[in-house]
Length: 449
Ligand SMILES: [Mn+2]
Image (cartoon, rainbow, N blue to C red; front, side, top):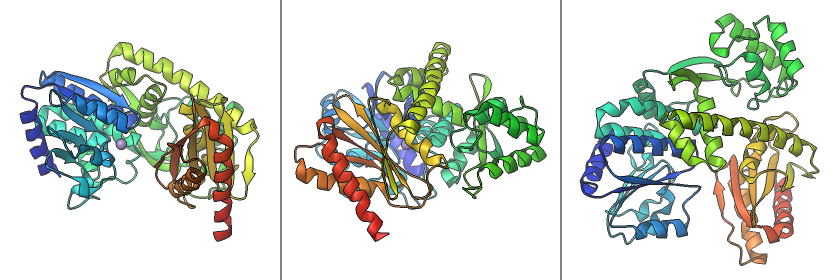
């Protein structure tokens, strides 16, 4: 993988000798940190570049971007592996730094791509978009090693930290300011426990999450100072805290989801919990401020103030959205719950809220949660599974859409995601028809199980 990176970096420098660069990246934390790494690298090379951050690559976007060729060299990060069919008649080479699924039959000489799926050992080479960008940057210049914190943030954004691949371990080793500590995975680990516990939504702690007095009771029980941070706990205190949390989560009698590694980085010269940085970047970008998210990654002070403002509002909106979701009338079926929030929850938050609900003890393992929220003329649909056993959600939605298309041939609905989290966008005027089809699909499966 690293040899291939060297070769692609060389090709890239050759191709951009006298041409400006166009960076196109994904809008989640991994994509934003990917873009930030590339920006910093190109600034250091004194290259001209522009950036476009997108939710996903649509045919429209790709066609527009390709029209800019051959005056610009396009580099995609954290996306485009699934769009190779659009790159069959290229006038000039394009570059792709990515980790998503790829159709190998669509490769050609003008597609210069780095993706672990194309290596001899995909498992060992599995990095996130930011990791690939980091090693690409380092192949251009060793001095870019100081961009490794961005690689780490991207890695945690895509949740690759619990089982480090070989190449991710290399990234971790490169990051000199990183501290890793084993413990309870609530965050931020850098703030007083009473706050961290109260805000803990994953894991959800019954009687403690969102419950001030409950937090105090738990801490009193353990004898731990309320103002200590997770990072400051000694081994004995950490184990007491773990026990107290486990007692409250007897329904989910597994420790895997509450015990893990805490990552702490120096960012803007203060110690920060990487999960919190990652959530903040994600929040800014999802709420339409990817520019601020990128500037924050580049440690711009003004962007930090703006980003913190957005993040605070985001957390408030999440908590109130969660309350709305809990009170709302739901369509209940055997093994599934549909939450049609319409205008009451923002489309950018519906997926996160479903994930939070999936972590609460109100639903039994294997339950499918479907959240729906209006998104201009469409409805955003997010599916989550409670626990980690159950149906493949991407398949559930795909099957639903196949049937749905028979009745609504003009729909442009398309499904994205994977087995544990999937989503799609459906036209708003087809709401009834979609719910009817979805219910049928969810009910069929009960019979099979
Ligand atoms: Mn990614």
